Amino acid sequence: MSLSTVYTRAQVGIESPLVQVEVHLSGGLPSLSLVGLPETAVKESKDRVRSAILNSHYEFPAKRITINLAPADLPKEGGRYDLAIALGILASSDQVPKDKLTDYEFVGELTLSGELRPVTGILPTALRAAHAGKTLIVPAGNAGEAALCHEARILQARSLSEVCNWLHNNESLPEVSPEDAPVRTSRLTNDLSEVKGQVGARRALEIAAAGQHNLLFIGPPGTGKTMLASRLPGILPPMSNDEALVAASVASISHHSGDWQSRWGQRPFRAPHHTSSGVALVGGGGNPKPGEISLAHGGVLFLDELPEYSRKVLDVLREPLESGEIVISRANRSVTYPASFQLIAAMNPCPCGYYGDPSGRCQCTPDQIRRYQGQTSGPLLDRIDLHVDVPPVSPALLQQAPPSEPSTAVRDRVMAARDRQMRRQGCANACLSGQQRDDVCRLLESDQAWLLDTIARLNLSARSYHRLLTVARTLADLNDADSIQRQHLMEAIGFRALDRYRMA
Image 1 (cartoon, one colour):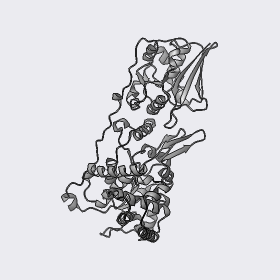
Image 2 (cartoon, rainbow, N blue to C red):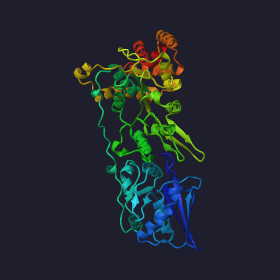
Image 3 (tube, rainbow, N blue to C red):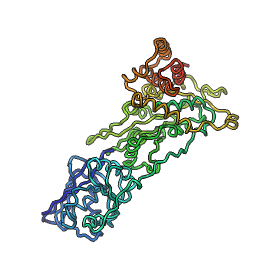
Image 4 (tube, one colour):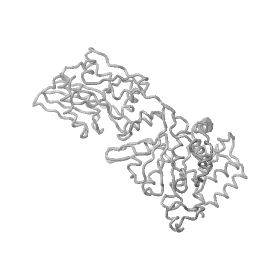
């Protein structure tokens, strides 16, 4: 009888817990049993591993083989355990040395020929291996992603044969270096200089970026609402390394994330269609995967045609907007994903889109308009700080207007205001807690009385009142003012267009 242990890591959300692959060989009829809550892809690994071992010119032991993936109560999925299982079988049959396996962790999927294929979720695995002080062996196809974790020692291999030769000290495995990591780029694809006119909407976009406020554009079709929203990531402050690693970890475990490495370090911009389900938006499934709000972590979630979304779908955004994370619970597990995103939405003022247009082309009845605007719940709109009118721009202005201020100039002002907030309270104004808000948003008695009277006339909720204060604080920061003044309050109230629509 022979027993060996190889270390690897599972994937649970953006966490990567340690898994021990225990392989035991004993006498009896040749068989292979795999235990420890393996899902279908893991159960199929025994066939991949057998062919990989044979095609790598090693012997597959004709014995009773028992493989345990510990801890037994942690569900295992995917082909990431193939390499560890193969090495466990070879070590138990004394074809590779056991003593060298203790200080390393192995992750990789095997082909039938013994080649190593890349797997998802390598970045979270590398971060956890670095925290544990272990050296990680990954497929060569994962080297670029793994290199984003500068603290870990990571080796790359192309095949099972390479790993076995390295264990026998016959050859060395190349080490992954920081130079292998994707290069962070600050190149802007969408610049604010391309937006002509829309001075009020541009101002609102700058305020939203400076204070991390949620924003709603309201206007008829073709006025540039989507164009404006797509320019927001270009004026936001650059992502910190920690923010970028968390966003990259979410993208890494997502099977539909695309080529995220080419956008490494850039703030995400996600724009799901209004037919998206609640699961697509917040994540879910039998084995919970991240949704759009997690893929937008650290960046922007843009919801165009807001009233066209199902009300139930939109209401699932309420808690993540407050907490910055989403907890997805299933019968056998609970997964928490980060979901700290900035919400930008756009809507028409009525079903036809032309309510309030000087041409008078809108034929919608007041009931139709109320019903249309009422499709978005009040609690969600309460969490949107800025409601901004985006009126039509005349063709003459589009032809004659000079280029607008570029994104780089606006971003400089945004970064100065955000810097002021971080020094003062350690977070953006939109994230202020109750006590912090009371401390940094103090008003003069006369301004307080004026604001309370305005709040009563607009019939705003307590949450809207607090968010109005934080917007005023951001306006003060953009003006480099130490305290909120009446002019800041008046401008903040001016960005409540939806309240005026409801009063009309």
